[in-house]
Length: 87
Image 1: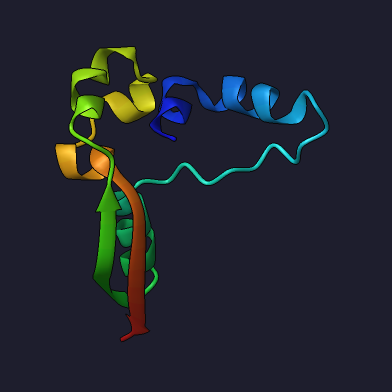
Image 2: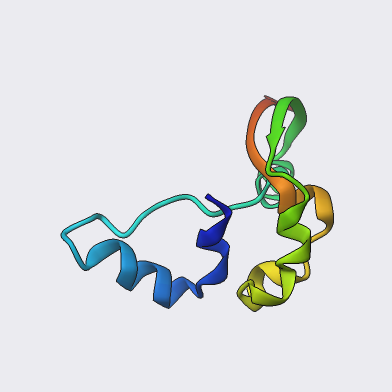
């Protein structure tokens, strides 16, 4: 859920470990994945993507600063299938 973008990394870790959870849940956005893979020598293609409705863009002021500045596609991406090929 996009509500997880409202919390700082520290707050998120506390929320996800307080009941014995691992503290890990991927919050990387599509551009973060693309950049990380491309920096490691992969050519990246987004095969399919599902998006949150546009209301998340209206909620931007409520998001943690880490996510607030994202472009609308990165912000709206809920799920993506990414193909990466080593160059």
